[in-house]
Structure formats: structure tokens, C-alpha cells
Length: 102
Image (cartoon, rainbow, N blue to C red; front, side, top):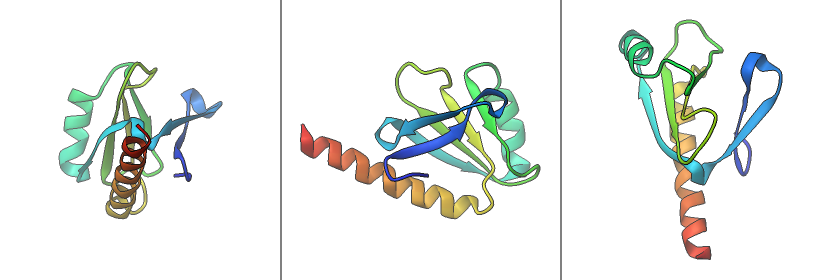
């Protein structure tokens, strides 16, 4: 997480991509034992990008708005609950800030 958005590695970790917090539609947290099956069924294909740091951890699914290379990002952070809470706060702050500018 950066101040303005979420940075993540691209295909084969060759480059970094960035999405602004205001462009994130939703964030969902799944425990590993329930999430792995759902993710394999629902979020497979070229529209999803797995960023796996841990083999067996809780799975965070981030849905992105608009036309993008990836529609869904799937993360396995060390502390998934804290990651989701912090991300939701930053998303709300960014959307509130953008609505005040309009």
C-alpha cells in the first residue's frame, strides 16, 4: 500500500502495476479453507491475478472498477484482517476526497 494507491507485481514479477484506491470496487476476505475453492472456481482465467506471498493463508479478493488488464487481484498477506481493514479505510478516504472535489 502506498499513499495514493495499491502497488502490486505484474506478470512474472517483471514490473509493477498500480491502482488508485478510488478505483477499487470491493474487498473480500476468505479463510483459506473456504476461499481456495471459491477462488479457483470464480476467479480463474486471464482477468484475475494471484499475488501469493504465502501458500496457505487467508485470501483477499480485490475487485477493480473500469477496463483493466486484471479485474480481480488475489492476495495472501501475512495479516489479512489488518490488511483488509487498512485498505477499506483508505478506499473510503479516497472516495470521500474525490466526491468532495466534484
